[in-house]
View (cartoon, rainbow, N blue to C red):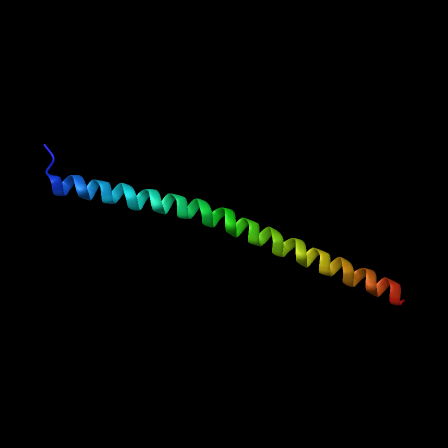
Length: 57
């Protein structure tokens, strides 16, 4: 049978595992949002620069 300290250790393990899972889930969502937004802004800047060069010719 389990002792109380082993039970607390198991609960601590499950808590840390759950926190790690949700942190990873949040970070994956946040990083993908960040990379997508940065790429979109870079694309808009390049497109605006190209349009400005065409208008100045």
